[in-house]
Image (cartoon, rainbow, N blue to C red; front, side, top):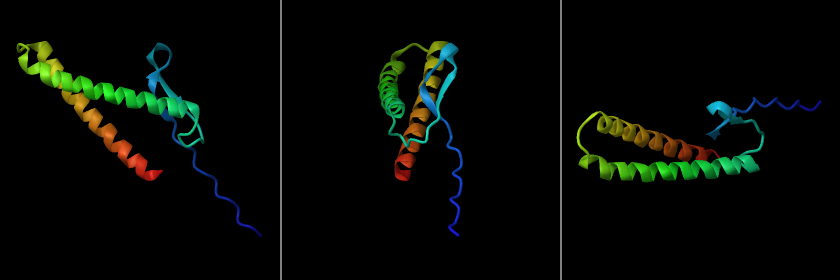
Length: 101
């Protein structure tokens, strides 16, 4: 008697880097390991978004010290800190994911 193959656990849906109708999140359900056309498009879009975030962060870093103090400056500084942290998390996760493949 041959051993029965173990059922594979369902894959986590992938959160796509764009929003759907009414700003709701979009997810991709697939067994395809990052090789399908939607996965490739999502990878390319994420790369562009991260690059834009990095450029905007550098621009804010140069611009903010010369702006007058106030609520908008405070908000902009906190937003740039949050963006920096989010980019660091994205980079870290990307590195960990590349080691899994």
